Length: 593
Image (cartoon, rainbow, N blue to C red):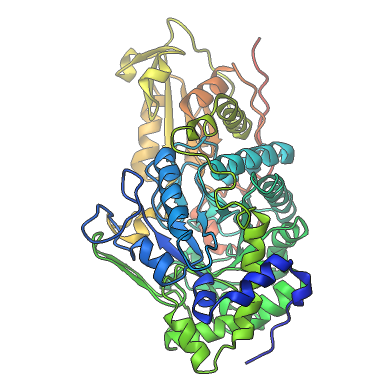
């Protein structure tokens, strides 16, 4: 067991030290857990098997009153009013604990397009922006900061304090399922976007900011073969190009900006001078590199379920233990190794028993727990929660006055518009009398721009919205929500576009949640081709019709083929041979007056 370097108690406020001195070992252990929770559809906390939760987690009252859990992460958000109602109940329960220490509430991204119970909670009524990689496509750090500040205000109003993002990973492996959450492929550009995003989330007053979590340190992008580290076949990052240090660049920018929290990656590295075990378990990564070399002194929270797994009986699935390289260790020894590495909080864990057992067995000292509890309490103080547990939050009746307001939705739409990338062609004419056949576009929205028709034979123009290709997994499997694998469109999709293009001019928009292979579609004559990252139909129609300027630029290369991707090195930016469109490419269309 190593000694952990930590600032002296004098570096923390008297309030933090006073609370720490009054806490029992059990309360300290609970403070270092970040438990998954769910709420009922009406916003009441889930409290047992007779309630309506689809998940079946530990009842919330038990977590707070009996297990002393200090932080919660939501796995479902029915809506912002329900979230505000749930928050009121949670705060009232936390106030009943012996010391009344407020609970901190965290969430994965809520303002994007993706909804995946493992990594995002979008679609709950917050202002809808583009995916983070779309913010990178704006190439406008000021806009990114403004958007992040808006996000922070909405989250605090709804009672969320901790943002379990941004992803500071580099998108150097196009097949990876998490590209949409990154700021792209280039280290410098991603660093600038990460810095702006962190500044926006954290720059408000104590009652306005949320604390950001940069992840997945030291870079989750170079996944072997593009497989995701949530699954054992994706357990490793690889470094055939020797580019490990380039992946640190966005994290260093986040640290320089004062990011509050860091989350190590699940993956176990291959080809480095480090153990082939998950990054969170490595002292050389967490203490020596992150804290020592890069100077980070915030909270390090593990990604979820690196100690124990979780059964979700109502969904018929099981979340595996993701302690890659250490699955053979007993859970208590994983806990000991995490704290020895320098971790502060255990993500996805809701039972302090293992932490207390580690202390009882002498594997972890109470002094070591104190070092981490200080950091956790300091963050609650930074959020104003120690003075007012309701700081920043409003009730369910008034939350709509602070979330998805006219000003916020206008900003979100502006960010969406700035992210649109024109790849080929030119704007098309829309208007009264122009008959448009569309796929993937709401007919009601299209009717405000042109005359929708049901068949290509009746059309003057076709507009097709396509999703980037991915390998499909069985419905109900955890991996079904992670879009990875091939980047090439099925032949039938290409032939479908060709048949339509043989009859009428075609606009094709591709949702680039990953760097799709657009080679066969770009080769179709007279196709106007755009790449977007999660934009409303109206934003797209404004762009293709010339009502709005188009200025977005690619945040990554678009490869020419799957073969080129397979031959590239996972850790090396811009390593696919002869890409179809390069990083930074984008036609500029002026708005028609």
